[in-house]
Image (tube, rainbow, N blue to C red; front, side, top):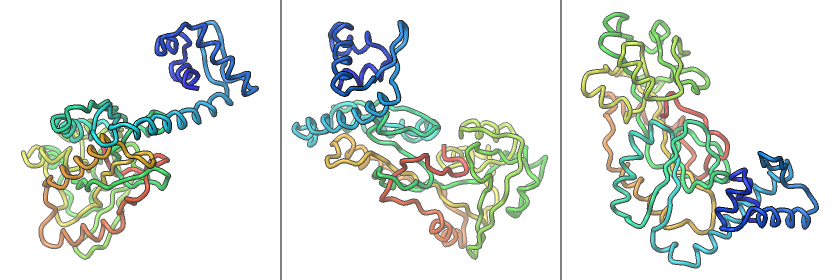
Length: 329
């Protein structure tokens, strides 16, 4: 089973042979024996390529779960469950990984010297089970699934633009004024609207108008710096520019829903010590963070009102690609 799974993963008998320190012929024999036992063809073979059949792909996915359970059982029987050590596989979006998670990982590795980290930065949905990811840090509301999620904190969303852009195009005074501006739009925002609430808590959704779409937060930030339009971005991405005056915060009497940040991991009876300590470390770190303050006056009350409408489910994870926020990366 393990030999077959490695052949599918690497699409190569030779690579599987090197992994298990056996000959390609022996690997092929293992797979043929398995096919004979099951009475099905698991692999399509050519002189240059190996791929799983439809039956083989289904069997491979089940093999991954079984092998994962076996690995968990072996880990549970060792001190890996009590002492954080080994390789921790983590994934998150590109911008959040660069701006927030990478510095946190550096500090975590100092605290836990027996753990190493494989960080995968992806702006698309990652199947945790398929790619054997220990924990994903996801932004935005989470869809219900069998995965487990723990909310870490909320990223404040900030509307801003450069001084030069505002000098040339005027400063919006109300959310509806944004319909006359060039909004820098996160590609996966669906529907393409930004939501604002006034001091009374009344929410208003504004349909976006703009000529630029991008699927990454850093690209939208760069465009805003170059006077290309108005951006709605998370505090960790635009906060430094706002504090330095390179970008000006807009509509200070209105607030937008925060973006929840959650740790998501596959279910199981035994959460490894490395995963548990990493999630606990992030939760404590974010609890100490100081986001840019919301607008004065009733801003806090408005934020709580919006949060009630956009609160993420912290008991279940995201088995399907999660709905996105205006610019979660």
